Image 1 (cartoon, rainbow, N blue to C red):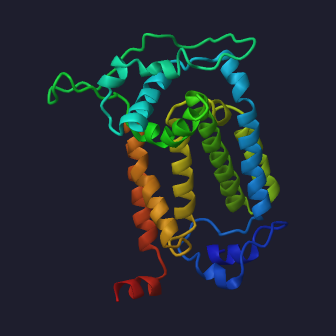
Image 2: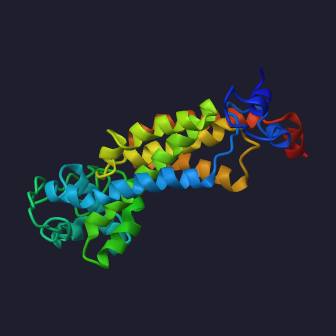
Image 3: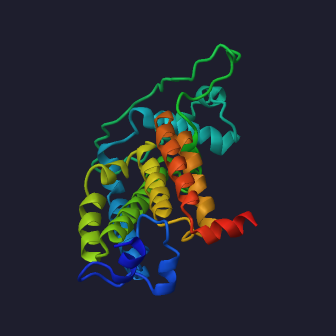
Length: 286
């Protein structure tokens, strides 16, 4: 059975995915375009985000201040938010790490198993730069994403906790895309819910929702770009294609290890472009 026919008929007991006219747009797609009620999508995202956000105070009670490379990522956030550059020397000299060390919140019953000053520099080494230029060893992709949350957190002197809430937002979007992918593969809402529930509220998605590492954002960009490309080139409008391209291009800025993922997604995008309906390709050439 072709994908178009499968999209029209769907598996036994599944929701009717799309109409006949819409099914034509899935030519060359690897996933059928199924319709999901917006209230169900809002529930999947909202419940994940609310539950994780509600646990942030409990997390800070035990894991504060941030430990490991999280502090180094936060220094990248600080220099972008305060100085609008990537140069870290003045930030270390001004002891800007106090915003997430000595000024970190200490709620009643605080345990505080985490890092402690002084913060090691862990700089990117290069003989091509003057010795007084200090740059973070880690890529700026994650710090750039966290800048808005850091600025909002500065209004309440809760710089670091605000970035954790933002990571919970990313976790909610990852869980939502897991639900959508499972629904598109199976065509059944109960299967999508069965996939979403344990993934959203267990390791690693829920654990990384409280940690400042690039794994969760890279998972979101990967899942979204893969889903949209698998739905077919024609199914995506210009804005969605632009967003998919942005996801693919941004992945290497999160970490070098994301470069192979970005390359594979780019190759898949070119394949999907070539697999467009012939009439669409001819029209594009004209």
